[in-house]
Image (cartoon, rainbow, N blue to C red; front, side, top):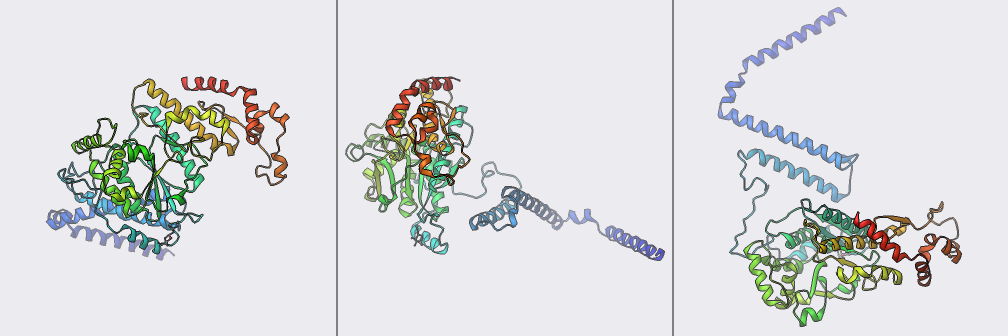
Amino acid sequence: MLRQIQESAMLRQLSQDQMKAALHSYHPSRYLATPKGRKMVKTLNTFKITILCGFITLLVLRGTLGPGGMFSSGAPQVTDLREQIIKSQRARVLAQVDEAIPDETTASKFVEEDEWDPSTPYKLGPKITDWDSQREAWNALNPGMNRTVDGKPKTLLVSGSQPGPCANPLGDFYHLKFLKNRIDYARLHGLEFFYNMATFEKEMSSFWAKLPLLRKMMLNHPGVEWIWWMDSDAIFTDMTFEMPMEKYAKSNLVVHGFHNLLFEQHRWIGLNTGSFLIRNCQWSLDLLDALAPFGPEGITRVEAGKLLTAKLVERPVFEADDQSALVYLILYGDPTWKAKTHIEWEFLLHGYWKYVVYNYEELMAKNHPGFGDERWPFVTHFVGCKPCKLGATPENDECFKQMERAFNFADNQVLEKYGYTHAALGSFKTQKIRRDSADPLGLKQDASSARRIDKQTIKSDPFTAKLELTEQDTEEVTSQLDITQERQRLNNLDLSE
Ligand SMILES: *[C@@H]1O[C@H](CO)[C@@H](O)[C@H](O)[C@H]1NC(C)=O
């Protein structure tokens, strides 16, 4: 026993001596002074940073992707994305370290891009000419990825707002509410959803930002058939209405407008690009390419604006916008733009807010969701409102007031399922419209007997029975409660707070 301990102590001593000897025979400072040594140190540092970043990436991914993280077998799409992130982050870290002095102009870019030469038409990216066959090949390789669970072609709802905070905090508040509204609509109708808050191309600012974004969406979601653009100031107000997609089998662009205003009168408001659907196909990429030269910020956009004002009826003098450019192409461009565009006027794919918001109460008394037209507007679009800009003007105050009403009008259709409603459209406050049940699924008791309404119940407890009311009943209850008056009162209370 004792001998064993002595032996191991001896061995330890021996190996320590050997190590010291080895260290003394090595002269790091001398070696590092050579060019080879310096290179070695640099490589070593790069390597250390790469390892560190790789490690951080792992931590972040494990944190973000939940338990199992890296090592669980997620959906193929997510696993692909994860691999892509890991690869691309490593490449970027190396590139950064290799760059001795960061160049101010390129420091924010990880890839070299050709600077746009303003004497040539602006391009969104490398010209693609065979997108339809590229998509088809991808879909053949990835069976089932171009269908929803119901077997329908996939639709991706795309929207966005500015990357920084609004000058007026109320603007951010309504962006959030409108975003919630999109999430609800997408969930109810099986749409995929992308919300962008990043700048993609510095030349394509303001209304033109949707061009590079739509192109990126098409190219990176080959399984998606339709992309549905919605401006940040538009809101779904018929949560049950569905687009009659079978109507658009031969079209590549569906946009709200009026034939006479557009084709006869050549008005710049003949159509509205606040909410439109565009097919993921070669034609659409070509359309984006045809629109892009009008858009670059600066002199190009200003000059293009002059052309559009000259050609389109009643267009005010201002820089080029995507809507005018589209109208111009449809009227004066290649005939294919007109041929494949469906001008939708049968329902409100875009509803001008001033024409619809003041009717909500009347519509609620008379109609029900599902029409999508003047009887129950599908989309309410706050054209002309500047919610992000600072400065309380009477116009902006009215915008915010009506945005709140539009949101609650829509949200009542969402809250219905959970047994709540907004007492008045102008009010944040909610009211319970049903008593909670111990049989929430209605499986225990005969559903038909539960649904029958007793007129007595209406009189004593109007909100319990509200759901089941017929039109006549609604009128009765409305007059009993004088809801309009109450609404007005709450309206004033809430919005003056
Ligand atoms: C999905 O892609 C395949 C292969 O291109 C095609 O045959 C099929 O019609 C597509 N389905 C839908 C719903 O778009």
